[in-house]
Length: 491
Image 1 (cartoon, rainbow, N blue to C red):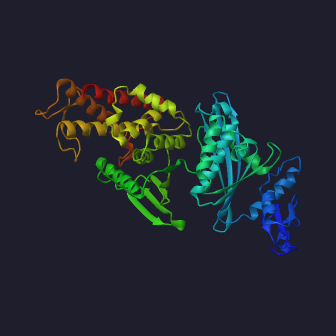
Image 2: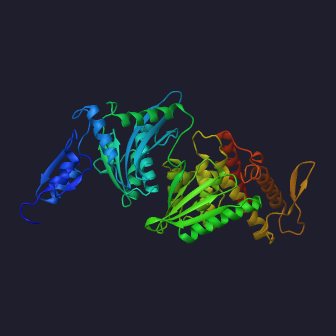
Image 3: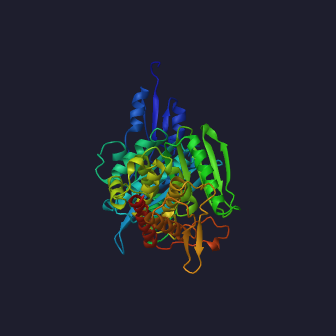
């Protein structure tokens, strides 16, 4: 570096950054109210200045000046960058809930675009931290959206100081929500640059107030709006695993209805990412972004069986129980680890884990996880999807594994008694004792009673039933898990 050379660090201006020409730096600050900048003789010092926290609140600037500065910043937003405003809220009337509101600005086709998201939570895991839990969930939502949409740089405006303190390691993560937050950041920090800027709460700053209203509205509404309605980050699946999941998904749809053709399209997009689109005749849709390094995002509506059937197939392919629990926590905004393994032993005391197929162990963990699900959704049918798969598994195990029958084309080994409406195994030459035969008939009848009407693969939506209350789905799960456990008593 030559003698006399200067570097101009524009911390707050039209386009913040480090410039080595004064005329370029001046363009960013001239006529810009509240501009903050400084000159340095070393670029390293300029970088330190840029990294230093600057409080933009009502103690330094008026709300009108801040709003003007923010409007100017949004006008100059660059490609693959985003600016987010987040806030959280909490209530204990009529029941405890916490929530977030998020507003995100970004460039779309050269124009500044805006999205807003909001959601309330009733789960107990993070309720202790109240509105802080909501604001953290809003930050996670913002970053997740950015990753999903190819954003490489996001600036997040927040009002709770822990948002930045935890992110920078200045505060130790003690609460469950803080641990979830720091764990999430450690996973994504290599993929996106995240900047934080503080705004004082309730100080008349337009977009901050708007995020606050969204968070409060989420507490009183039964619906919610997120960027994804179910986007989950999965690590550990290879391209071959993903292709196999898609093939199994297509075959399963045809098993229920030969007219139900699942359409799959894929293409390579920028940065080597491969994008998949999966659709069916009922206009259900799943989007998948595969990054070529065993990392993918699966996006869809979480409260549909179409999505849940696919996600459980994907979860079943994961290489470990820990990976399963991680994905389930991300999918359901929870942080459950120890209690899930404990519940497995409590609800399935007779299951012999040592010889249990890894896919089925993962599937049963998902069923147990769903048994503890707490949220307001219009249809709870998706929660029982893992039990459907368990019934399939154990029917194949008995009919094919024990009885030596060919189950590749289904379970056509039962006759229906039209007086009792019950099915009975019709293969007389079989190795089953009376207890095993009784169990097989019970398993198949439960399979028919539960899986068929709630399959959600029907061509005519009127042929499909839904589970409108959470207790019914929990009853199905509990009874199904008991039936699975009984297998290990009689076989």
